[in-house]
Amino acid sequence: MPSEISQQIGERVRAARVESGLSQADVAAALDLSQAAVSQLEAGRRSPRVDELAVLSDLFARDIDYFLTPMRARTAPVGMTFRAATAELPLPELQRAVTRFIQEIESQALPEQRVRVHVSEPASAAREVRKQTGQTGVPVDVNGVARAVGIGIFYEPLPDALSAFLLRADEHAVIGVNANQAPVRRRFSAAHELGHHVLGHAAGSVFDYAFPTTAEGEPPGYNPQHEREANQFAAELLMPEENLVEDAPLLSLARLARRYEVSAEAMSFRLLNLGLRETIDRA
Ligand SMILES: [Zn+2]
Image 1: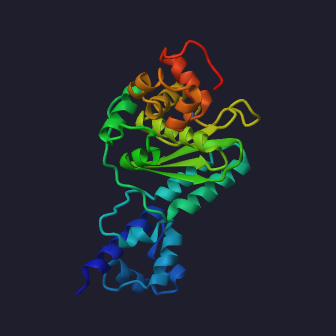
Image 2: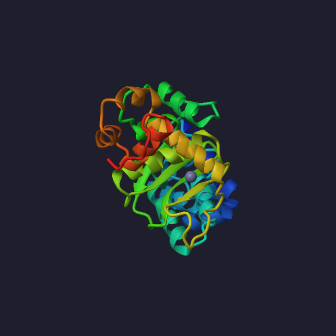
Image 3: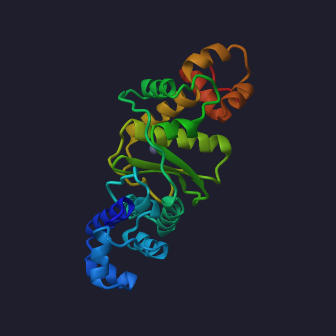
């Protein structure tokens, strides 16, 4: 009688094979087994060995976890959908960097979504997400907020042109942030991508260039209004108005920037926008 675990693995092997458009004969060839043995495996009457799972994981572009973790049902081959996004990038250098990034993170578990935000005004959405994740103090824990909305943020060295990106596939999403940027810049980039996600800016992926006017041209899917909104979200997430109203009269720009873990430049614009300072000052 097939065990429950063999049966579950078998079902997932079959589902992944069908989604990959492969036949049992293809899988048999990859595993160096007979087609009958693959049929047994899919029926849960034969447990695969670990080395066979590794081959299947490559063949179907799935994590080994996909075959083993009982509750983690992925509805689509996430890695493959993420990979499709790299084709949108204009430069081979950027394509390679994002592909490498996807390989890096593919085996890592993605967080479960605990918090859902249904607000489309950027600052309100940021307040809502902070409230729902219990982030009332500063500096705001951007990675913690991201995990709560089901997003993994990964910091990897990327080419200078690429500041950060959001890869989306169904309900799964990951954020890649260029680790070569200064820490305050990384935080803002992560919060900005989180804004794109929470505000539902794209069904697919979003790429943000560090210098949008360079030779790369506009990133795939570039939309100036979405960029403004993602920045408004990031500003309210990292520099909440209600906290700044209290702190701004008491602290210098440099101390405010340190306290909120943002750049002095970002803080300066924020204070100006909120009417808490009258001029841009340079710390
Ligand atoms: Zn953006």
